[in-house]
Length: 467
Image 1 (cartoon, rainbow, N blue to C red):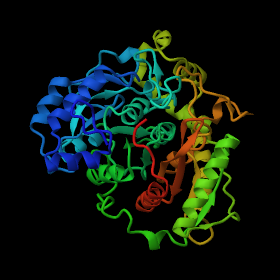
Image 2: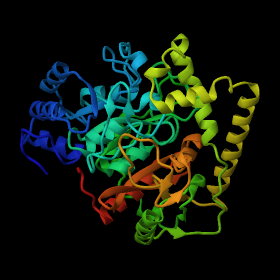
Image 3: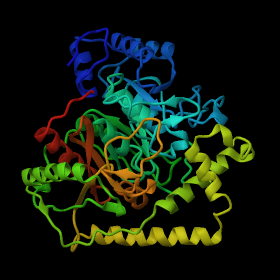
Image 4: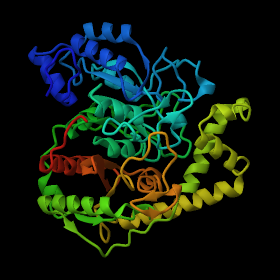
C-alpha cells in the first residue's frame, strides 16, 4: 500500500480508516491528495469537483465513524444539494440539485465520509459505455483504449485508477456489475429496495438499485451496513439490517452444501469462449473450497427481456426531456437518440400489457430456478460477455469471435434487475491484461451469502486493488 501523503491511498477504504485512526495519515492530506489526482486525471472520470467543500469537511472529519474522513465520489446521476444535476446530458447541463440522494447522503452523514465531487456516467444511465456529449470519453485504468463500462463508468475508473477508494454507483440493468467486472472491482446489486431511492423516488420499471463500487468485499459490506434501511419517502425500501461486515467469513457452514448452477448463457447471452473457460475454472475452485454442490439438472432458461427493459426505460427519459424533445436530439448520445426514436409512440396499453406479461414470465422462471425444494441456491455466471471494449464505442456485436449482435450486451445482468434479487460481481482474473468478473446471483435477501462467497474468492485469489 502507498503511504506517500502526496498520493491517494491505494488500499481499500477500510484500511484507510485504520490509518486515520492510528494517526499515520490524516483526512486532510488524503483529501488534498485526491484533489491533486483529480487534477491530473488521465481517465476523464470526474465531471465536477467541490474542492473547498471537501477540504472543509476533511478538517472536521470524525475518524471514529465507519468511513470517517474517506474521500468519495458521487455518481453523476445521483444528486447532492447545490451541485450540478445533469443526468450526464447536455440539455440538463445547467440544472442544479435541490436535494441529496439517500445513498451518498447516508455515507456522508452516518458514515462520516467526505464528498469530493461527481463521477462521470453514461447519459441517463442508459448504456454500458461511459461516453457522452457532455463529458466526452471515460477510460479504463487497465487499458486507456478501453471503456470502464457504464453507467457507473466514472466511479469504477476512479476507484480502480487510484483516485478514490470507493464511490457511489447505481444499477438499473447492470450498471454496478458491468463496470465492476471491466475494472477488477467488487460490485453488489442488492435486493431491490435495500438502499432507498429517496428523495423523490420514481419507480419507473422497478429495476434501479443504489450501491457502490469498491476495492474489497469488506468495503462493500461496510457500505451497505451504513446506507441500507427503510425511508418512508421510498415506501418500497426495505427495513434496516446490520452486521454484514462483521459476518464476513462466518458463514462457512451456510455455504457448504448449497446447490449451484454454473451457467455461461444466463439470460440468453453469448459469452466469449476463452473468457468462459477461465471463469469456469474459477467457479469450480470456489465451489470446491466452500463445499458447495454443482448441479446441472435445473433448467436455467429465461425469457428475453432486453427489449421490454429498454422500452420501459426510455419512457422516463422521454418524460424528463419533455418539450425539449425532439429539438435536443443532436445534443444526445447516439444510443439514447436512437432509443428515443425507436420507442416513440410504441408505449401504449398493448405494449404495457406485453411488458407486464413478459415480466411475469421471467418472475415465474426465476422463482422456479431458485425454488428451495427443486432449484438452486446460487447461479454463477460471467458479469460481462467479454472483456472491456473500445472506450469510444459503439457497443460490440462480436464476443470472443462469436457474432451475437449488440443486444447481447447486458443480457447477463438484466434478469436480477427485473426480478429484484441480489447479484455480485467479483474480480476473477485477467484475459490479455484486462479484468474479468464472476457474477454470483442468489435469492431475494441473500446478500450475506453472496458477500461471504465473494470473500472466500477474495481469499483464494487475492486481486490487485488498483490498476
